[in-house]
Image 1 (cartoon, rainbow, N blue to C red):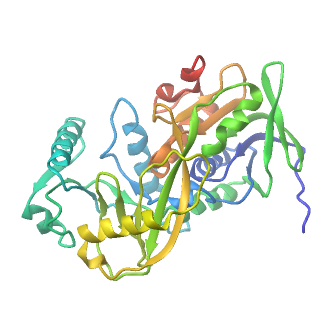
Image 2: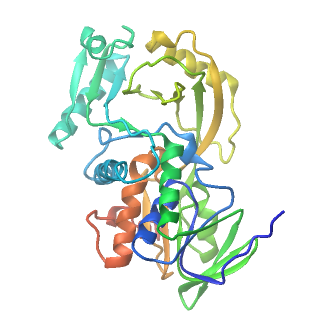
Image 3: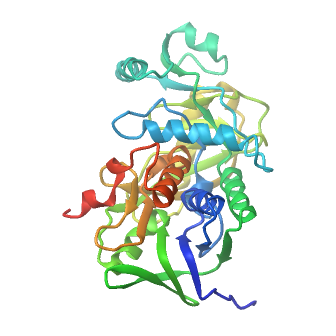
Length: 371
């Protein structure tokens, strides 16, 4: 086994190489910062490879996350023209599927609210649903159609930003577990790891559902917890639809390789990533009822992933109160691919210039200071 050699110091250390960490490292490196990215396993090893890659603003609200959703879509469109890696960006819309009268009312309210916010959307009823999307069965009674939404391939997206960060000079070391944040006189002085210590004046924790334990080493309680999701990918199927299909609890989309991804609700079961075969079968059967062309699809892959859920369901972005030089980039829940790139750019802009196009105050960690 090759010994891991750590640098003695770095200007900024980013811990975690999921989408939140790699985008943060990318914008830091692009801004000329000496940045070190660390991960105990590898890029996209956790939730960033386990999600469906649905993006867009149809579920956003100006009071909480819409600016981040819009900013992220803009980033994806920009970097898709400059990155060497194709990450399967397709902006062909999202159809939110109503299968009960109660869901119809909920989606009607969603469309009305989002149209007031400037989001293009409309309700479809009865046969209008199948006219727009023929793969859907008549079990779908109505739908909310948001043509501005889309999808990416999450693992490819994370790896694309990871490689772009390296191309701008970011240093990456894998197989290192960070055990504590070190401080001196109320400010960050570095980190302790499984392979030694590294000095740094700034540390950014992009450690997802595992953030609380590291923040606790400086005495700050971060109310972020793992939200488990059961996920499955079918065996490769003929082209189904380029759109994202999203029911109230489950969604589906097709990858370029033909796999159809289906998932997922949020389960509060701690750090258990085990897969319940019955849950997977229920998910597949549910979607087969809505998309008859999946009737012969077989389960190809299954997995459980742990999303970083905050207690108020908002991201947690920015400086930790009382510890100068320590920032958090976590709490994006089920929407990391929709929120993290814009979150990272805004945080880095704030660090480097003192301001950002996106107001990060609603996501500041100090809202939990007295929780």
